[in-house]
Each structure stands twice: as structure tokens, then as C-alpha cells.
Image (tube, rainbow, N blue to C red):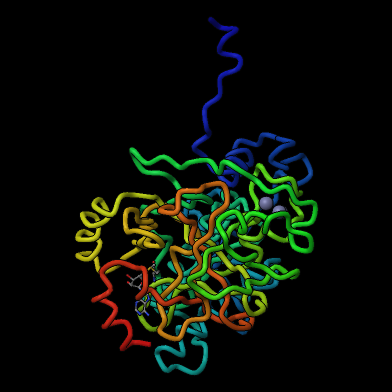
Amino acid sequence: MAENLKDCSVPCKMSWEELEALCRRERLHCKELGVNRANANEYEVEFLCDYKKSKEEEFYLVKWRGFPESDNTWEPKRNLRCPKLMKQFHLDLDQELRRHKRRCIPKKLDKELTSVLIQKAKLRQCLQRWEAHLNHTRNHPGRIFVMNEVDLEGPPKNFTYINNYKVGQGIVLDEMAVGCECKNCLDEPVNGCCPGASFHRMAYNNRGQVRIRAGQPIYECNSRCNCGLDCPNRVVQKGIQFDLCIFKTENGRGWGVRTLQHIKKNTFVMEYVGEIITTDEAERRGHIYDRQGSTYLFDLDYVEDVYTVDAAHLGNISHFVNHSCNPNLQVFNVFIDNIDERLPRIALFSTRAIRAGEELTFDYKMQMQHVSIFQVWISLE
Ligand SMILES: C[S@@+](CC[C@H](N)C(=O)[O-])C[C@H]1O[C@@H](n2cnc3c(N)ncnc32)[C@H](O)[C@@H]1O
Ligand SMILES: [Zn+2]
Ligand SMILES: [Zn+2]
Ligand SMILES: [Zn+2]
């Protein structure tokens, strides 16, 4: 029995940082946690909570990593070596003072102000942890950043990041039966390569940009094709390539997504991923989402309206992309390892060049359910 337990493991409920703090408190050394004889007695500033100026000397109230807030101490500025945290503290402080139309930093901050600054610091930590989790979960090259400079809302509850469709109960994805025989799919397609098998055109040019009209399907090469992973007819399957940022919008549209890199016209940006459910089930869930005032239901109606993608609780970064009537992304139906035309993958491609920093949007009206509530949003645009 005891030997069997040797291979057992249980996940640790403490974070890396909590373990490190515990180690320091108990005066233990640990190679994996980076706590050794030389640095065991160093204290790390977790965040700054308050500020005061007394006799021309500046002080900060420090929250120490691994210690409760009751152990916070006032430290003179000259003793602190945390320029990034200090800069962030002053950015937050300036923003709050400006909000209250106050120009200079007072010698002592009032309680209300410090409470907001502490909440902001904690929110930032919480968003950083979520960001790290999202990046740990993603399987695509593009990184995910998270930012909220607008209010004190933290990560959404009840949302799990997934990379591919999750199939709901009773739904089966058929494996693509045939692949192509080409050596060079773009320049010497055999029988029209994979798109040719269903009398469609090759969707991409040699730079991976989509060149067919919206509404036409994309048939990419698949696991049974003769070509390699560098085939130009494999784009969506390579996943998100750009660094994107989930940010809190300033005009009440909740979270949104902006690109941190320049995106050329007709370029694949992301897939709309979620749970595939039947349209009947979507109808049922739709009423609940309507009451909550938001929708994440995307109807797969390429040939017939049988299935819907629900990205409310399971989804990728597309969960956060907002609607616009003048969008910079458009939807394409994509088939890769699945031949069931009722179950296309949904890929979002740029409609024009998009500058780094621009918000990404698509027009929900075509596919998203319960669009009546969009009338309200459209007036917000
Ligand atoms: C797919 S989600 C987009 C992400 C969402 N903003 C969030 O915070 O999770 C769709 C929801 O976002 C909001 N939304 C999207 N586009 C909007 C717009 N143009 N104006 C106002 N709200 C919008 C609506 O609440 C909608 O139900
Ligand atoms: Zn081919
Ligand atoms: Zn192929
Ligand atoms: Zn190919």
C-alpha cells in the first residue's frame, strides 16, 4: 500500500508566492523557491498602501509579501528599492487626485483615498494572476495581456479559457475522411487540393491572407494530407499569432480586446471558440443570458441552423470581443478535420489593416442570437 502511494500527488493549494513567504517566515531554505541563506532575511514589498510627507521626508506604508496587513510598516522613501511599484502607486494616486479635481499631492492622504489605492493594487495583482493563468492555458503563440484602468472589476467569474471547441452532450465531430495528395498545395494543387474536393477555391495567398469573399468556406489541409505543417493552406489551425490585450472599456461595454501588434488586411486573428450545443439548448440558455443582459451565443448557420457555439462560460479570447457596425474583423466558416458542414469552425479575419492599440470588433448581427438588445449598444457606439 505504502509503495503505491509513492506515485500519488495532490495539487498544492498555496501559490508559489505564499510558499516562498512561508519558507521565509519559518526560516527554511529551498532551492526551488529561490530562498537561500543569503536572501532569507530580505523582505519584499508586495505593494504600497499609503504616503505621507513629514519634516521634508517622504514615507510609504508598505505591505510586505508573505505578511498580513497588520504587519504593514511606514518606511522612508530612501530605504525602498521598488521603483516600479512606486511609479505605479503615483500613477494611481495622480489619477485619483485628478478625478477629485485636486492638483497637488497632500502631505497626508485621507482614508477614502488610501482605500481606493489599496483596492487598485490588489486588483492589479488579481488581474496579473489571471493573465498568468490565461497564458499558461493558451496553446497559441500570441500572448494575452489583461488591463483595467477604468474601475475596480476583477476577472470574470465562471469563465474558463479553452483553446478548441468543447462538444456538448450527444454531439459527435466526424473526422475528415480524406486528405490531399499534393506536394505543394498552393502552386501545384492536385485536383484542387482540399478545397477542390468540394469544388471550392483555395482560400489563401502565399502570405496566408484570405483571398475569397466572406460567405465562401475555407477548407484547410488536415491531418491526412500529404503536405507538411508549413503548407500555406494551414492558417487557422496554427492559432492566434498576435499579442492581444483584454481591457476594460471606458464607455460601459464591459471588457473588450485590443491588438498590441499591427495586423495586415485579410489576416487571421482568432477563432470563436466555445461549447457546441444544439440550437434548442441555445434557445433555452439564451433566455437566461438575455435576463443577465449579455450574449455569447453564436449560431452555426452555414448550411442549416442546428448547432450554436456558446462561449459564455467556456471560451477563448473571442469571448471578450465586442460588437460594432463598422467592424475590423469578419467571420469565415472553416473546415479542417471535420467534414460535417453543420459544424464549421468560426474564424475571424481582419477586414482592413489594424493599428497596434486598436480595439478588435466584429458585427454580431449576422450570427449572434438575441440581437434585439444590440439596439441599445449600437446607440453607444
Ligand atoms: C461576446 S460579449 C463581449 C465581451 C463583453 N463586453 C464582456 O465584458 O464580457 C457580448 C456582450 O458584450 C456587451 N457588448 C458587446 N458589444 C457591445 C457594444 N457595442 N455596446 C455595448 N455593449 C456591448 C454586451 O453586454 C454583450 O452581451
Ligand atoms: Zn493539397
Ligand atoms: Zn490538404
Ligand atoms: Zn496542404
